[in-house]
Length: 344
Ligand SMILES: [Zn+2]
Ligand SMILES: [Zn+2]
Image (cartoon, rainbow, N blue to C red; front, side, top):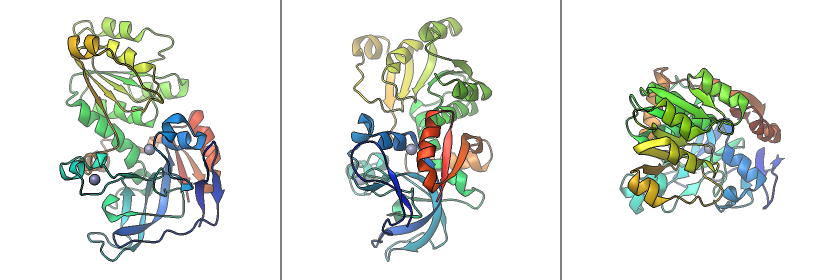
């Protein structure tokens, strides 16, 4: 079958036509991929960056982890799914038995497999996953939007970690797809003001279109801007870091008010020091991180918002390409693309 494969360490990947079709175990399902999305993580893996290497990718590997598709075959022990079911797929393949899994934190499973990193991914005609990783999609959700659930779920999880943002001022660093959906959600959840930080002018405009105050952090003193614009609180109530830029966390810690909250989503490629005494102890900031989506409450929340048309994800799909043009898709991500969809 056709697939995008990363064969060896170092930059690059190749489209092959002879990837072996997946063989099913009893608890697994075979999915005919209907739509897949390129993620920043794929670009990192393609370029072989430090943050991609930190996931210990298992090579050779079929890349990709964001997809929706149709169940074509099922292992003998699979229950609750049927052939022809349309599903989106959770990237964090959890075991269901370990301590985090048994205590409601399966997204942080000790024995986790990661689709498209340690487990053959979805940039292919077919993919296979444990049946437990499938999220059935109602007929009302098109395949393209189903493939957006994985990345948009990260944004929903970020809001879950932040707690109630109603009437809050919110700072969102990074206006990539995850940041843009964080902006949408913050507004939907009743934030009073949203400030977006982004260096790419095109993305900054997208944030502005959503109603955010858009700032290029290279051209503005962000903490000063926040203190000036939210003088009563002395800064923003909540900040989200979605860019992964290692330099931005100190800016966010400076920009939130005392007893404010900071949620980090992007993975910086290096360790970022935090002045615990100043920010966590004295300033009283709550600092939390996000890894993936909670199964399945994040997904159900997202579905409810999308199904009722309160959250529109379709506008984020800026480019559609056939699978063989994967490399073009990676290039587009470096420019003005939000989400690049691949049709297998
Ligand atoms: Zn992703
Ligand atoms: Zn587990």
